[in-house]
Amino acid sequence: MVSDETLVSQFQNGNEQAFNELVNRYREKAYQIAYRMVRNQDDALDLAQDAFVRAYKGLRNFKGNSKFYTWFYRIVTNLCINFKTRNRFKDAVSLDNEDVHLPLESKTRSPLKDVINQELKQKIAEAIAQLPAQQRTVFILRYYEGLTHQEIANILGKSEGGIKANYFHAVKKLQSLLAAYQHGL
Image (tube, rainbow, N blue to C red; front, side, top):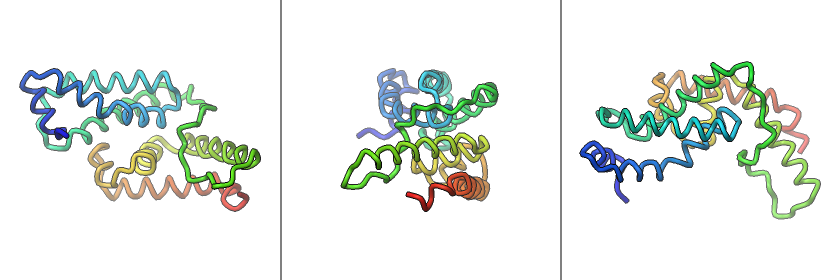
């Protein structure tokens, strides 16, 4: 597989197909990050597309001081943060939470367990939506995307210590918000 750095270099030298390969490589991740941050499919699609437009426009000047995905995720997360700030009063929690993937399923399935799992997924999504924007962003990038604290710090332009603190506080707040579900299942 061709590296991101090679594709960036090829694009900067006029190969438009190289950018298409980057889009194919990161389309799903861009959408997932956006969706988890804004909780609306249409807005997430728009934000992911806008991120690629901005990346396309800015990639010719990309100096390679960071990895492409770090630079690109910064674009996605900044667009989402700006969107959430502009739409703060419209921030309703979506009832469509099929993207919340947790190890809740057991080998023996029952209708009752399915209902409980769906309810828990809903409560988790609602709790994540209640986090302050910075904590929510850090939590999503760490928990769902599996990025390291350092990678998140690079994406958000913050210190690694600040990212660790945000993640810690996000987890503590989620534990508090979900306390009723921690032992009852």
